[in-house]
Image (cartoon, rainbow, N blue to C red; front, side, top):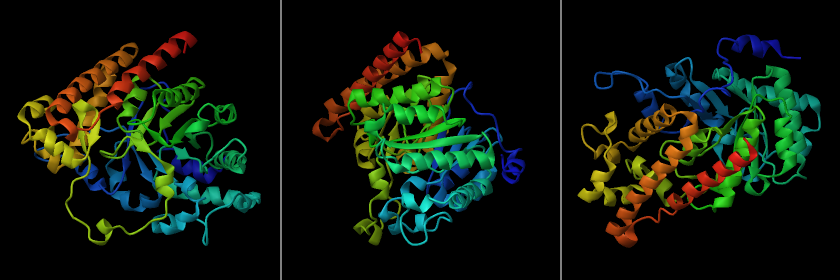
Length: 410
């Protein structure tokens, strides 16, 4: 039975799932949230707010972003990533923001036996949902732990957690699936997700790097998302920056990504014991982060971006005419977060401007142009240039997955 306390309080905020609409790009909000708040607020220079599809907020930071929530438009999708899949590792105790979560274990990491009691599951789920409810999410993410194998006891527990979530909030729920890359074709996980009764799935595959992973692995990822989508689930591919554009163009999934972050997700890095590095002890304030070069479809280190843009012939290939760079193209180095958000908004709009059947081909053409620019950079900078090998793989991934869809009729 649906818990009326949750359901009644969220009716005005909830929206229909987006399965029959364009896939969305959701911004994963981090410590750079002030930049996003600024772009959502019009001023003399910026007449209209940046149009975004929505946001994903880490549960361990949601209290910082209450002002941001007020600036989001009514049709924005708003999700909280509960981070539960990080709470089964002993190293979670090294991360104060995780320990501070109301649903974190008070003394250690979680273990399957902690959830033997149905009342405990009910209380745990209610605590996770309470944080999402307070942020006025548009869709709930069911708590879920990382499942390392089909035999893992966490798999059955995740079923129970999802069932209890749906008992409390109804059907407007996304299952959270966090699995290793070697389980992408496991029928047990796929069938359970499809038959779960959830409206959608938040998909995290680890480790996954669109920059370095071989073609078969990336094809498997796209195929998994497509199978889930074909079954009627609204799929969101978690932590997939530029490669998420391929998923959107293929009609496979929505995706989220942090601002100008690299093309990889590795859960092991998130749960690794936290150590104070030299940079943390003596922080270098103002040091720019990665720089997204849209014409390369790649985020590069700031040092590399400076080398590329210092060459006039290369700089001419990477012109940005968005509001962020109209005063000076050097703004891309000074305000990389703003540049990324404007560039990504243009990329998403470009995909949506094409008929759906044309989008994979248009994306492949864009990757081909990016590869040509990359070749000129490699010739000019020599060994100082990145390899850009992913730009050779991505068109082949798109072609292989397109061919498999044509053969299967999907």
